[in-house]
Image (cartoon, rainbow, N blue to C red; front, side, top):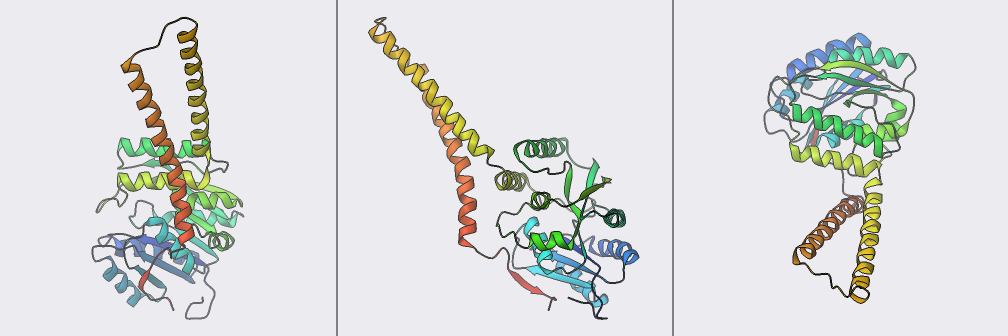
Length: 315
């Protein structure tokens, strides 16, 4: 795609939006001011992920004053990762910046990301030095998740990073060839390799509204990351199964030995119930883990579209 002056686009900025009507104007002003210092040939792609407020109306106002602003309006809420993916599908810049729409990630940092890119890095991610305004629980669980994920996967996923990053058009090209339904973009980008670098920053606290990531969504996001890039949970299920089978075999041998050699029959309702509950719990957990993988296979086999665009100003 080209701008109206028929010049190639140097930089695309993808911004997923969910109930951000209060800050869209400020968000646009800060992004536009920063990006225009890099190049006048840019595009700003806002993806409205089923917002329930007047975010879409605010985006429509922006398109009327700036022909470099594009919007994608989903038919419903499909999720943050899918919203970013829609922007990636539509963008055409030489470099692409992904940034959240809540202004916790400062748009002014785009300049530093771009400067790093000019040093020869295809991927430059913004690494959080401090997370202001977030609860101790969220900080702790996020820290545990990323470190656990790094240990159980074979790829080097950067610690303490979100989706705020700059990627080269080569990276975009290969991302478009990853059709999986359960998106975990920061893992996919890390999997691709290329030369990567980081820029440290302090993440601001949220000023308006509340986060769209509930505890349930955070758990689902964590499961997507683990099941997309690691089969260690399945290996763990196998090891637990063999361990319990071996232990059970030993207990059976001991029971036979006690009955026929020592003439003592092992009794005990409590021990029987405890062992049955323990084995039943392990089985249910194992089935649940296997079910998560099967569910993801099923979604990819059905091959439904990732998202539905209700309307957009892309031609």
